[in-house]
Length: 273
Image (cartoon, rainbow, N blue to C red; front, side, top):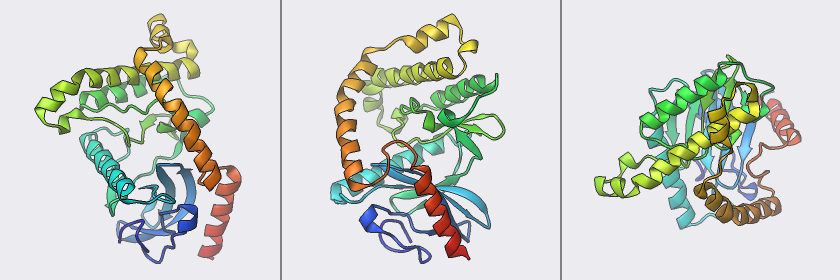
Protein backbone atom coordinates (compact mmCIF):
# COMPACT_ATOMS: atom_id res chain seq x y z
CA UNK A 1 0.00 0.00 0.00
CA UNK A 2 1.25 3.50 -0.76
CA UNK A 3 1.90 6.44 1.49
CA UNK A 4 -0.28 9.45 2.17
CA UNK A 5 -3.44 7.53 1.49
CA UNK A 6 -4.13 5.27 4.43
CA UNK A 7 -2.22 2.59 6.32
CA UNK A 8 0.75 0.40 5.63
CA UNK A 9 1.22 -2.55 7.96
CA UNK A 10 -1.05 -0.87 10.52
CA UNK A 11 1.07 2.29 10.55
CA UNK A 12 -0.96 5.27 11.68
CA UNK A 13 -0.92 8.59 9.87
CA UNK A 14 -1.37 11.74 11.94
CA UNK A 15 -2.73 14.14 9.34
CA UNK A 16 -3.16 16.97 11.84
CA UNK A 17 0.66 17.28 12.09
CA UNK A 18 1.31 16.87 8.40
CA UNK A 19 2.78 13.36 8.68
CA UNK A 20 2.44 11.02 5.71
CA UNK A 21 4.84 8.28 6.84
CA UNK A 22 3.44 5.33 8.81
CA UNK A 23 5.17 3.86 11.84
CA UNK A 24 5.91 0.59 10.02
CA UNK A 25 6.96 0.05 6.39
CA UNK A 26 7.62 -3.22 4.60
CA UNK A 27 11.17 -3.39 3.21
CA UNK A 28 12.59 -6.48 1.49
CA UNK A 29 9.67 -8.53 2.72
CA UNK A 30 10.01 -7.61 6.41
CA UNK A 31 8.30 -4.99 8.60
CA UNK A 32 10.63 -2.15 9.60
CA UNK A 33 9.74 0.36 12.30
CA UNK A 34 10.60 4.05 12.33
CA UNK A 35 13.33 4.67 14.91
CA UNK A 36 14.42 8.25 14.20
CA UNK A 37 13.43 11.47 12.46
CA UNK A 38 16.02 13.02 10.16
CA UNK A 39 14.16 15.87 8.54
CA UNK A 40 10.68 17.34 8.20
CA UNK A 41 10.29 20.43 6.06
CA UNK A 42 7.90 22.04 3.60
CA UNK A 43 8.72 19.55 0.84
CA UNK A 44 9.53 16.17 2.36
CA UNK A 45 9.71 13.95 5.42
CA UNK A 46 12.79 11.77 5.91
CA UNK A 47 13.09 9.10 8.62
CA UNK A 48 15.19 6.09 9.57
CA UNK A 49 13.53 2.68 9.66
CA UNK A 50 15.09 -0.41 11.22
CA UNK A 51 14.16 -4.07 11.04
CA UNK A 52 15.34 -7.58 10.12
CA UNK A 53 16.98 -6.37 6.88
CA UNK A 54 18.86 -3.56 8.64
CA UNK A 55 18.50 0.22 8.56
CA UNK A 56 17.00 2.19 5.69
CA UNK A 57 16.03 5.76 4.86
CA UNK A 58 12.41 6.39 3.89
CA UNK A 59 11.57 9.68 2.23
CA UNK A 60 8.10 10.93 1.26
CA UNK A 61 6.74 14.17 -0.13
CA UNK A 62 5.09 16.51 2.34
CA UNK A 63 1.45 16.99 1.31
CA UNK A 64 -0.28 18.34 4.41
CA UNK A 65 -1.79 20.63 5.54
CA UNK A 66 -2.17 22.09 2.03
CA UNK A 67 -2.99 18.95 0.10
CA UNK A 68 -4.60 19.56 -3.29
CA UNK A 69 -4.46 18.25 -6.85
CA UNK A 70 -1.68 20.61 -7.93
CA UNK A 71 0.54 19.78 -4.97
CA UNK A 72 -0.06 16.03 -5.41
CA UNK A 73 0.93 16.30 -9.08
CA UNK A 74 4.08 18.28 -8.23
CA UNK A 75 5.04 15.84 -5.45
CA UNK A 76 4.61 12.82 -7.70
CA UNK A 77 6.59 14.54 -10.46
CA UNK A 78 9.51 15.37 -8.14
CA UNK A 79 9.66 11.81 -6.79
CA UNK A 80 9.57 10.35 -10.29
CA UNK A 81 12.33 12.71 -11.47
CA UNK A 82 14.50 12.02 -8.42
CA UNK A 83 14.23 8.26 -8.94
CA UNK A 84 14.98 8.64 -12.65
CA UNK A 85 18.13 10.63 -11.92
CA UNK A 86 19.15 8.07 -9.30
CA UNK A 87 18.86 5.43 -12.02
CA UNK A 88 21.50 7.26 -14.06
CA UNK A 89 23.79 7.38 -11.03
CA UNK A 90 23.39 3.85 -9.67
CA UNK A 91 26.89 2.93 -10.90
CA UNK A 92 28.40 5.41 -8.43
CA UNK A 93 29.08 3.57 -5.17
CA UNK A 94 29.14 6.74 -3.06
CA UNK A 95 25.52 7.55 -3.86
CA UNK A 96 23.09 5.42 -1.79
CA UNK A 97 20.95 3.22 -4.01
CA UNK A 98 17.18 3.18 -4.16
CA UNK A 99 15.65 0.04 -2.66
CA UNK A 100 12.07 0.51 -3.81
CA UNK A 101 9.37 3.06 -4.49
CA UNK A 102 6.43 3.41 -2.11
CA UNK A 103 3.26 4.53 -3.83
CA UNK A 104 3.41 7.80 -5.75
CA UNK A 105 5.01 9.95 -3.11
CA UNK A 106 7.79 8.02 -1.38
CA UNK A 107 10.72 5.66 -1.70
CA UNK A 108 13.25 3.68 0.35
CA UNK A 109 17.00 4.12 -0.07
CA UNK A 110 20.11 2.64 1.50
CA UNK A 111 21.28 3.90 4.88
CA UNK A 112 24.84 5.21 5.20
CA UNK A 113 26.25 5.13 8.77
CA UNK A 114 27.76 8.51 9.48
CA UNK A 115 26.74 12.15 9.75
CA UNK A 116 26.23 15.20 7.58
CA UNK A 117 29.13 17.45 6.63
CA UNK A 118 27.91 20.32 8.80
CA UNK A 119 27.78 18.05 11.88
CA UNK A 120 31.09 16.27 11.38
CA UNK A 121 33.87 17.28 13.76
CA UNK A 122 36.49 16.97 11.04
CA UNK A 123 37.24 15.29 7.73
CA UNK A 124 40.44 13.54 6.69
CA UNK A 125 42.94 14.83 4.14
CA UNK A 126 41.49 12.64 1.36
CA UNK A 127 37.85 13.55 1.96
CA UNK A 128 37.48 16.43 -0.51
CA UNK A 129 39.50 14.61 -3.18
CA UNK A 130 36.94 11.83 -2.89
CA UNK A 131 34.03 14.27 -2.95
CA UNK A 132 35.47 15.91 -6.07
CA UNK A 133 35.68 12.51 -7.78
CA UNK A 134 32.02 11.80 -6.95
CA UNK A 135 30.88 15.15 -8.33
CA UNK A 136 32.86 14.54 -11.51
CA UNK A 137 31.09 11.18 -11.96
CA UNK A 138 27.69 12.79 -11.35
CA UNK A 139 28.35 15.45 -13.97
CA UNK A 140 29.76 12.88 -16.40
CA UNK A 141 26.46 11.01 -16.11
CA UNK A 142 24.66 14.16 -17.22
CA UNK A 143 23.22 15.23 -13.86
CA UNK A 144 23.58 18.53 -12.02
CA UNK A 145 22.87 18.21 -8.30
CA UNK A 146 21.94 21.91 -7.88
CA UNK A 147 21.30 21.56 -4.12
CA UNK A 148 24.84 20.66 -3.04
CA UNK A 149 25.21 24.05 -1.37
CA UNK A 150 23.51 22.48 1.66
CA UNK A 151 26.05 20.56 3.75
CA UNK A 152 23.15 18.36 4.90
CA UNK A 153 23.21 16.79 1.43
CA UNK A 154 26.84 15.68 1.83
CA UNK A 155 27.62 12.84 4.21
CA UNK A 156 30.74 11.87 6.10
CA UNK A 157 30.54 8.10 6.50
CA UNK A 158 31.82 6.22 9.52
CA UNK A 159 34.49 5.00 7.10
CA UNK A 160 35.61 8.61 6.59
CA UNK A 161 34.47 8.64 2.96
CA UNK A 162 32.14 11.20 1.32
CA UNK A 163 28.63 10.42 0.06
CA UNK A 164 26.10 12.61 -1.76
CA UNK A 165 22.33 12.39 -1.15
CA UNK A 166 19.07 14.23 -1.93
CA UNK A 167 18.62 14.56 -5.68
CA UNK A 168 15.12 16.01 -5.34
CA UNK A 169 15.81 19.10 -7.46
CA UNK A 170 18.67 17.65 -9.50
CA UNK A 171 18.55 18.25 -13.25
CA UNK A 172 19.26 15.90 -16.15
CA UNK A 173 18.41 17.38 -19.59
CA UNK A 174 19.15 14.05 -21.30
CA UNK A 175 15.65 12.91 -20.37
CA UNK A 176 14.22 15.64 -22.56
CA UNK A 177 13.69 15.76 -26.32
CA UNK A 178 16.82 16.73 -28.21
CA UNK A 179 15.46 20.12 -29.27
CA UNK A 180 14.74 21.16 -25.66
CA UNK A 181 18.05 19.67 -24.53
CA UNK A 182 20.03 21.94 -26.80
CA UNK A 183 17.92 24.99 -25.93
CA UNK A 184 18.57 24.52 -22.20
CA UNK A 185 22.22 23.50 -22.47
CA UNK A 186 23.55 26.99 -21.51
CA UNK A 187 21.48 26.89 -18.30
CA UNK A 188 22.62 23.34 -17.58
CA UNK A 189 26.25 24.44 -17.97
CA UNK A 190 25.61 27.16 -15.40
CA UNK A 191 24.11 24.58 -13.01
CA UNK A 192 27.23 22.42 -13.33
CA UNK A 193 29.46 25.40 -12.67
CA UNK A 194 27.48 26.37 -9.58
CA UNK A 195 27.86 22.83 -8.21
CA UNK A 196 31.62 23.37 -8.34
CA UNK A 197 31.31 26.78 -6.73
CA UNK A 198 29.59 25.22 -3.71
CA UNK A 199 32.09 22.35 -3.61
CA UNK A 200 35.02 24.77 -3.33
CA UNK A 201 33.07 26.81 -0.79
CA UNK A 202 32.64 23.73 1.42
CA UNK A 203 36.30 22.83 1.06
CA UNK A 204 37.40 26.35 1.94
CA UNK A 205 35.20 26.30 5.05
CA UNK A 206 36.15 22.82 6.32
CA UNK A 207 39.74 22.30 5.14
CA UNK A 208 41.16 25.71 4.33
CA UNK A 209 44.67 24.30 4.80
CA UNK A 210 44.23 22.14 1.67
CA UNK A 211 42.75 24.81 -0.61
CA UNK A 212 44.89 26.03 -3.50
CA UNK A 213 44.89 29.63 -4.69
CA UNK A 214 42.78 28.70 -7.71
CA UNK A 215 40.26 26.81 -5.56
CA UNK A 216 40.10 29.71 -3.13
CA UNK A 217 39.27 32.06 -6.00
CA UNK A 218 36.59 29.71 -7.39
CA UNK A 219 35.01 29.40 -3.95
CA UNK A 220 34.91 33.13 -3.34
CA UNK A 221 33.39 34.39 -6.58
CA UNK A 222 29.67 35.13 -6.67
CA UNK A 223 28.19 34.78 -10.15
CA UNK A 224 25.13 36.59 -11.45
CA UNK A 225 23.23 33.29 -11.21
CA UNK A 226 23.95 33.04 -7.48
CA UNK A 227 22.96 36.67 -6.90
CA UNK A 228 19.73 36.21 -8.87
CA UNK A 229 18.92 33.02 -6.95
CA UNK A 230 19.41 34.78 -3.61
CA UNK A 231 17.32 37.76 -4.70
CA UNK A 232 14.40 35.55 -5.76
CA UNK A 233 14.49 32.89 -3.02
CA UNK A 234 15.15 34.88 0.15
CA UNK A 235 11.60 36.35 0.34
CA UNK A 236 10.19 32.91 -0.49
CA UNK A 237 12.19 31.15 2.26
CA UNK A 238 11.20 33.84 4.77
CA UNK A 239 7.50 33.30 4.06
CA UNK A 240 7.90 29.51 4.05
CA UNK A 241 9.61 29.48 7.45
CA UNK A 242 6.81 31.60 8.88
CA UNK A 243 4.26 29.09 7.58
CA UNK A 244 6.22 26.17 8.98
CA UNK A 245 6.59 27.82 12.35
CA UNK A 246 2.88 28.55 12.49
CA UNK A 247 1.95 25.00 11.52
CA UNK A 248 4.59 23.37 13.75
CA UNK A 249 5.85 21.35 10.79
CA UNK A 250 9.49 21.27 11.84
CA UNK A 251 12.45 23.60 11.61
CA UNK A 252 12.70 24.43 7.95
CA UNK A 253 15.79 22.91 6.41
CA UNK A 254 17.26 21.95 9.79
CA UNK A 255 16.94 18.60 11.45
CA UNK A 256 14.24 18.36 14.12
CA UNK A 257 15.25 19.37 17.60
CA UNK A 258 17.02 16.85 19.83
CA UNK A 259 14.05 16.93 22.18
CA UNK A 260 11.63 16.03 19.37
CA UNK A 261 13.83 13.22 18.10
CA UNK A 262 14.37 11.82 21.61
CA UNK A 263 10.63 11.89 22.27
CA UNK A 264 9.98 9.98 19.06
CA UNK A 265 12.62 7.36 19.89
CA UNK A 266 11.12 6.89 23.35
CA UNK A 267 7.68 6.47 21.83
CA UNK A 268 9.00 3.88 19.35
CA UNK A 269 10.75 1.97 22.13
CA UNK A 270 7.58 1.82 24.22
CA UNK A 271 5.64 0.46 21.23
CA UNK A 272 8.22 -2.30 20.72
CA UNK A 273 7.99 -3.39 24.34
